[in-house]
Amino acid sequence: MNNQAMDNLVIKIREIMESSKQNLIREVNFVMLHTYWQIGHIIVEHEQNGELKAQYGTKLLVELSKRLTKEIGKGYSRSNLYSMREFYWGIQFSRRRLENCLGRIISNFYQ
Image (cartoon, rainbow, N blue to C red; front, side, top):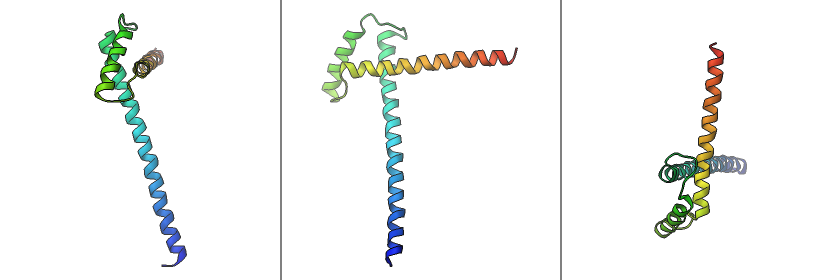
């Protein structure tokens, strides 16, 4: 095999590997975001029963953080759990605003 053929083979394999790495990074990021959203959802549903404010939220996050850190490991500090909860609320708020806007657009379209 001459040098040019070898160079082409290496380039093709390198392109496949780079593409695969980028796909993997995107998938991992998606799974992480989905996981954080789910954790936030569970916290909000338990702690707040779908309401905007919880009466005992801070205490719950502190205790939940201790338990998850003990059973699962790092990454579940009170502030991380709070951020996951806020991430869930941010998505929900944006979704509701979008639904309201779309509802108004649709109703105006058919008037």
